[in-house]
Image (cartoon, rainbow, N blue to C red; front, side):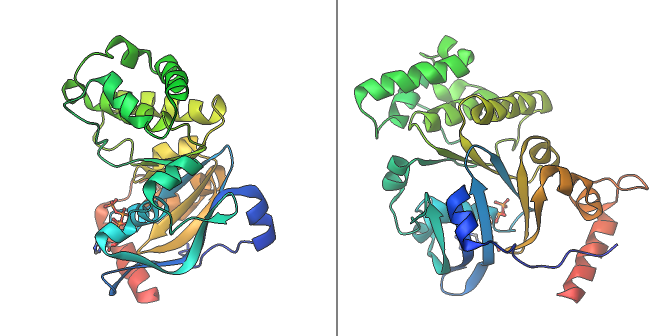
Length: 282
Ligand code: ATP
């Protein structure tokens, strides 16, 4: 078995511009003028699908999300090469509120609801770019999708469970009426049954609300169960990409991201050995 080559996928410029809602093209991102976090990454996110970005700690997943949310500069990060486009227009220079107006919204890692506000107040805050009528309409939709939030609408968000806070964070993002929802590790720190529920909601967003979802996950198994297409990042580069079915069947992915192989689950020692081998190769 051989490791897959560390190359970015080739994107035909005309095809991808027509079909992708969001596109990263040959992106290079550097922090503090010194640390190269992303190197020549190209990613296409077609409309009304779920694309997953997989990879372990430090692979560069959050950096890509920050770049498409207009907050890279707050951490001294800079897009030094390449482009990020949404509906065919360059967006990496836009401020976060303008990105939201254009239809991009992100649910950050760790949920980050306003803990002292009620559920309803959290949702109202999410509608800040919308008119009062649009806010009312979105609120109805969100409560329709999350009956639990409706039941507890007057309760303080900080007292809710982790799973409920994750749902509130998704609900608040939906208040902006997005075309594209980016989710940063929605399963982090949650119990398996709660993760099931969150993932059911994510599938509904695609299947019923026709939203486009960019799903960032370390939990490759969960993400591959639901997504249409995935990219695997390692040390700032795309090392593999393909349909969920293709990646789930890939031996390297099974062994090192799903933790299974023909001979059963691999140990961390094997994984370390693999990483050493890869360092020799690179
Ligand atoms: P995690 O799952 O832990 O969030 P990740 O895949 O999202 O990891 P990033 O957080 O994007 O990875 O980090 C990619 C690289 O950029 C890492 O080497 C990290 O140390 C570096 N990095 C991230 N944020 C900063 C920053 N603000 N300043 C300097 N380096 C950073």
